[in-house]
Length: 225
View (cartoon, helix red, strand yellow):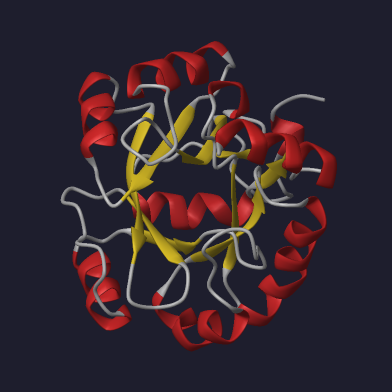
């Protein structure tokens, strides 16, 4: 199939279609040993066109890589807040402090014009935001993660089934903590360079990859923890 054939009918097929992983960690996050540079090199080697570096409560690794390759690296942060679960902002310039309440965190993200999404809903083995909480803030965020590479596949299916009730877009990422896992889950979508373009582009995105089987998840837990 040609690249043009992957676009929905009516879409401008002159826009380049790229492969992106929207949830990647480096050694700036807990329990990750690979450096930002090592994660970057692995992503390049696997043929990805963009990655969102979303370390926990810091932009250090993301900013260092974005300075090196701004077209490839999206500066993001996975933020621990005073609410259930975590929240991710993309296209950030300044880190959002951890431990703040939902109102403060969402206001701070929106002030930077960030693309905002809830990672790994329906994931009891992660910090996760329950559906009732997502619905309360749905008018202030852009997407929920419907495929997470470290989540059980059937729980990703639950997230995808829940998404239409939120009227939000779905987004996908590997949640890679190991080099080998980068790019296992992500999206094919028209190229973009900022949060507003991503909001438009993601409407035509197609997910790739899937979550973990129960057996592979147990192996990953043993290796990482």
